[in-house]
Every structure is written in structure tokens, then in C-alpha cells.
Length: 386
Image 1 (cartoon, rainbow, N blue to C red):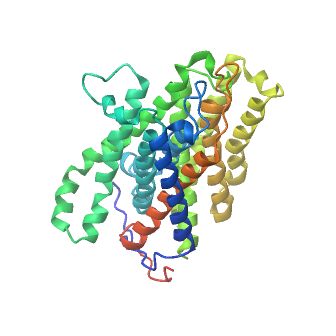
Image 2 (spheres, helix red, strand yellow):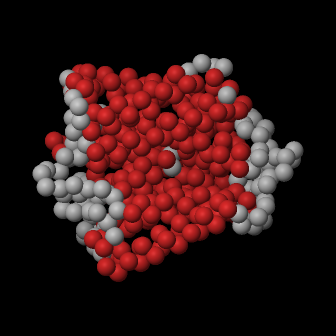
Image 3 (cartoon, helix red, strand yellow):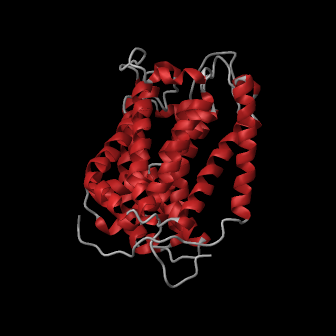
């Protein structure tokens, strides 16, 4: 890695009791209460799922979209450790922390949506596994990646507890852990696209293509950088810290590079397959397609110029739009463009929405607690942290 000197990370400090953490606590309490009902009386008691729609927002939002939102750690680690861009190293820990919660909760979200959740262990039992299943590959990769991320992040806890010898020993094996942490997300993010490929004609032509694995991987990387922009801007505003524009501006240019490759592939695929006219047929699918494309194209206009990438507000907005674009690509493929046959409809119940809100609340609360009590964000001596 290039020799770059950075301020050491330090706990932000300050009180853990405020309006945000209290709101998160209320949402988490509601989520727990609903999940108690769900596990006692089944999915039908709290969800709008049916035989036509075996999965709803707990899988699509909490797992498929949530894991893509959690790719910030992977995207930044790839930049720092694979492409030797050590100048971005201060972004690794906060990005990894957000990824840690995102993936861990995505793993938990799968359990919520399983009808016979008590049989989940069969997924990994040698006599039950199906190595030819895309779902098996996704499940194994996500499970392994959650373990890998906790190990990658553990130096933060060891540092705070004064376990410097243990940290040194762990660092000797960290190159292998980081390599795994780069490969595993590539495998399962592309395989989430493969899940739709194997569904064939059940998926609307605007979202059904053999290129889905590449499209899902490219958007996961792009969303990872977008989440880092979003998270850094929000954390800087909440903790009244200086925004690290010297890192965010060049990183946004890299993000736009991945976005441009994605758009060329996406639009080229639609033209080659001859399905683009379906985007002009008045329908819900066409409307959602154009919303999705608008969210992907707008950042190119918003921060395409170097001078605009130095504007924190534009960077924040571009990050939000790209997160929305990636989320809509997945929502459209897994729910809006999912043609399950006549007689079935799905719309999430209030209980499902509250559980999803509770999951995001856990992430926010966890992020606040850990950044305030453990060395995650770069030390800042000038301004008060709260």
C-alpha cells in the first residue's frame, strides 16, 4: 500500500441518549413485538404474503437491497487494498461498520421470512445441502462474509480494550481475511442477479437478462460508494465534523466510472434484446423503469463536472439518488416485474413496514453507539463531537 499518513481513529464520545437514539429504540421495540407475533402465529398473522408471492419486503428490502447498501465496506476495501489507494484508508472503518450491521441484519431478515424457520440449519447440513442451488451459494457466501467482516472489524474492539498483542497477531492473518472479504461479496451480489435469471419468463423483460449477475455486481459496487458518500455527509453533519472532501471528491469520480460502465451495459442489453419499446408501453412496469433509470442518470449530470464534485450537497444528493436507483433495480426485478400469474397480488402490511423500519433503526443505533464509544472515525481535534 502507498505510504499515507492519516489521523488515528478515536471515539467521538458524547451522550448516547438523544432524540435519534430514543426514536430508534421505539422502532426496535415495535419490531420485536411484531416478530414475537410472527414467530408464535406464523407469517400469515403479520404479512401480506401468499402462494403467488412467497417473499415480500423482508427479503427484497432487508436482504437483497439491504446487502447492496452494505457494500460500502467491500467497495472501499477493494479501492484501498486491491487497487493500492491508501489515501482512502480513513474511510475503511466507518464503511466496514455500516456493512457489518447491514449484512448481519440481512442474515437475520432471512430467518424472519422463512415459513419453517426452525429448519434453517438444514441449509448447511451435509446431508441436506444442494451445491447446485443459487440460493445455497448466496446463503453460504453471505454467512461467511458476516463472519469475515466481524473479524475485519475486531481490531477496533481490541484497540479500545488495550489488547495490542492480540491485535498484532490478528493483523498477521488479516491479508487473508481481507482477500476473502473482497471475493465473497462479488460472488453473492452477482448471484442475487442469477436468482432472477433462473426464474425465466416470470420476470418482466425489462429486468430479465443473462447480464443480471454483472449488472447486480456493478450496481452493488456503485451503491457501496454512494452509501459512503451518504454516511460520511450525515455523520459529519450529526457530529459537527469537517467533511472529508479531499477523499470524497476523487472517490465520487471512481463511482461515476462504475456507473458509466453499468449504464452502457444496461442500455446496450435492452437495445440488443429489442425490449426497450416495452418501456414506452403505459404500465406500472414502464413507470418504475424510468424512475429507476432517472435515479441512475441524474448523478452523472449532478456531479459529472469536477467543480460540482467539490460541493458536499451535490455529492450527498448524488449518493442518495444512486442508492435509490440500485434499490429500484432490485425492487423492480424481485417484486414489480415479478409476474406470478393471475389471482395473486402483494402489498406490504403495516407490520412488515414497521419490521423493516426497525431493522434500519438497529443499524442506526448500533452505528451511533459504536462510533461514540470505539475508535472508528478519524480523530478530529478542532471541533467538539457533539
